[in-house]
Length: 113
Length: 113
Image 1 (cartoon, each protein chain N blue to C red):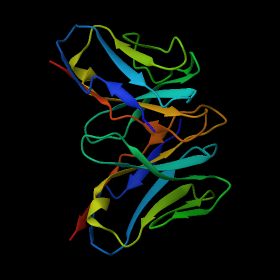
Image 2 (cartoon, one colour):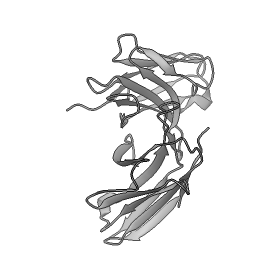
Image 3 (cartoon, each protein chain N blue to C red):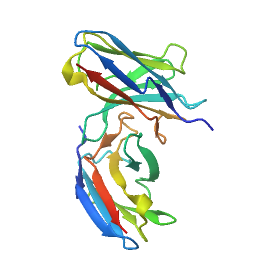
Image 4 (cartoon, chains in turn orange, purple):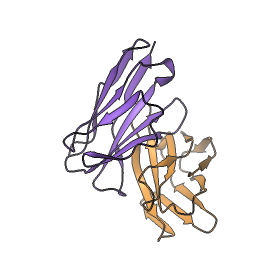
């Protein structure tokens, strides 16, 4: 089955600087890669996603890049703000096999004011 | 519009008891997923419904776990003879179609004493 690894597990960034979180996946059949933000006591919130026919996608301060050959994808947050502090999860799924998301282990992002 | 709702938000039960956890998906979403999240980990897939039928139940850990979605909307996750190891946050997600974006509810925190 699919295995998703995520790094780093914790990340502290000065407010206004950029943050990058990286994930690798193992199943070459995976073709959908969402990113979720989870705040304490809440469910994961979808913030951006990318499909395997696209190399990069951007939404305001958030961008995701995908390298299918290397089987890795990354989340980039620019101009970080205190409200960006949360745990971020990457995930992968294959529409050709089943619909389940396989999640990484999470990155706790702390924005230092 | 209304998001995914889950009830109860918290459930404390004694070892050996039976529990039911309810999920109300976003109106019109045909796909529904259950995940389980242990402390400090990413969500782990349990079961996926497309309409009324379970399309993939490969993540259910054993036969004490069962889920239904009789009318293709609300779903109930049922756990028999609960064990302390069942303690976790149970998350429900829905999607407008299989293979689409998954939107999560706030979760039910289950504690087995």
